[in-house]
Amino acid sequence: MKKTTGLDRSKTRNWHPATQAVRGGTWRSEHGETSEALFLTSGYTYDSAEEVAARFAGEEQGMTYSRLQNPTVAMLEERIALMEGAEACRAQATGMAAMTTALLCQLSAGDHIVAAKAAFGSCRWLVDHLCPRFGIETTVVDGRDNDAWEKAIKPNTKVFFFETPANPTMDIVDVKHVCALAKAHGITSVVDNAFATAVLQRPMDFGADVVAYSATKLMDGQGRVLAGAVCGTEKFINDVLLPFQRNTGPNLSPFNAWVVLKGLETLDLRARRQSENALAVGKFVESRVPRILHPGLASHPQHNLAMSQMEACGPIFSFVLDGGREQAMGLLNALELVDISNNIGDSRSLCCHPASTTHYGVSAEARADMGVVEGMLRINIGLEDPRDVIADLDQALTKAGL
Ligand SMILES: *Cc1c(COP(=O)(O)O)cnc(C)c1O
Image (cartoon, rainbow, N blue to C red; front, top):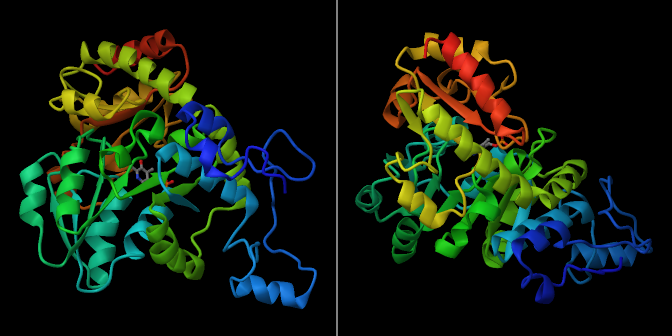
């Protein structure tokens, strides 16, 4: 295949992120197609028996099986790595496949992991339930508290794991401080960057070792496919993650990779516009509810920290109603334009009740500890005209008695 804008990093590395999002990793076939080709193939054929043997032996470059390599998936991996400023990236079937792979590929029985308590429900489940089953010790800390991270370190601590902003409490972790602390102790920092993406926040610029993604969210951004990715050094991806991935198979399908490639072309536009819209809607909601958790608003206790590590606030915020579950569900049921949906990053505005959905699977104690209360709603602001979203929230808040 012609590598017209190629997998050759020497030029593409210097492009600005918006350019990388459109063109990075493009790898053209002999037909010179404009758009990325979709290689919907599980396997490959060879001209000779010797050729395939050489490929399996690593003596000759080339694809052998789509659990190991696929051209469409490789384009996506290269594009995400470029945008992230990472040496390498491997795509995963879902965001949770990415988190599971990023953790289990490097942890063994007897190791210890420190994780922020505020996290997506399934991320908390990995820490609270999966790791202990395999003899991996876990400590959960308040991710906002720099000292808590330091106090939790033990001689066998291998990994720090956190997301920022956190789903759905919008807690912010000081990426620079916590990743430097990890580095000083030989600990690998794994950052779940799903809420921001490289357009809004590049954790590696602040010292993160590994950045993991749900690409289902802003990267696809149009509610079509599940996807994930893990970025890191070539050494980490090739020597630590790849053996795990090759043999356990959490791979992304080429079709889904192709959809995400097309999503990335508009990511910069969408992430910035949705952040602007979320700020406009957030200002309105703040005037009507007792408590809002929005990193773009000065009322967020970590607003300055958030804005020092993010280019914009992102499309998601949460708010808390005094009337508990009943009032929160009443508001959801009164929405006309905004959909009741537990997805985020979508171009449509979506609202959900985390305690009964995304965080249903974590224990009531863990929910209370991380601040996922019954009156909390989380909203993703899409690409609609924010005036229409505000009008819908206005009437729904009124119906809910606010
Ligand atoms: C959605 C989400 C995930 C899981 O991603 P899937 O693609 O749904 O598997 C992980 N982390 C965060 C922060 C998320 O929002």
